[in-house]
Structures are given as C-alpha cells and as structure tokens.
Image (cartoon, rainbow, N blue to C red):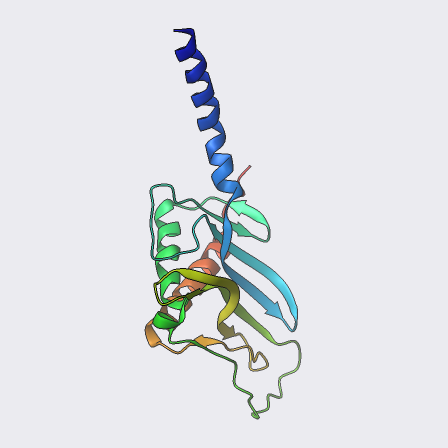
Length: 182
C-alpha cells in the first residue's frame, strides 16, 4: 500500500511538471516582422512543439508572442495558423519561394521603406518523406510603400493566399491588443 502511495505522489508530481516540459520544447514556426528600412519595429511569433505541419497530436501545444510578450488566443486560431503554414513550409506544396525581383523601377517617395515579412520554419524532406533539415526563411513580403523591396512569395498561388491569410490573422491580433499572459 505504501508503494502505491509513493507511486501516486511521483505520478502527480510528474504530471504537474509536464506542461512546463512541453512549453520548454516549443520551436519558432512563424515570425511576422514589421520593417522600417532594416529595423524590425514589431514582431509576432507563433510557436509549436512539432515542426511537421503534416502531423497532429493530442499533445500539440502552441503559443503566440507579440513583441516578446506571450498572449493567449483561442485554440481554434492556433490550429488555423498551423493548418495554413502547411502550404508554404516546403517546396512540394509552395512550389518554392521566389526571391525579391531586382527592380529597376524607381520610387520617389521620401522616408523609410515600410513593409512586413513573414518567415516560416521551412522544411526539407528526403525521398522517404522524413524531415532532414529545417530553417527559418522568408516566405512572403508585403509592401506598405513603394520603397519596400523584400517581396518574397511562394510560387504556388494557394500557398501565396495562405501566407497572406497568416499575415492578416497575425496583424489583426496585433491590432486587437490581446492581454499579456501573466
């Protein structure tokens, strides 16, 4: 009987620590940067505990930070971001990411180049569909004036729409001013 009580105490303490372990293992999956010239003026980061957007688990855990402050959003919104990132996280669905064109068109606007860059955890698979490499890469750029030239975009039109949807969701969250998690 004493053995069962000790085992129960060990299990309870392990389960109490479990959320902290999951949270500690979270990986940056999406990063929306607001840019003014070369300075990042605002940053929204989406974290998860699994880099593979093709797998789901009851143990999936997500979090969101705006300018380094953790905020709480509804679970369906986390799932929506996770679903959208699938189409622009690797070459077979995104069609690759187009680099910004070297434009010769000039812009006579004064002031800083303003825009947003969405970076995603970009995956490389081997022929057996195992992830062999991953890195944060710019996948979509959105200009707020004609001076901003970092206009990355997925080749596939569906992936472009999904990247744009992620930008709109994250930008809206930023505008709503969600409360910081204490």
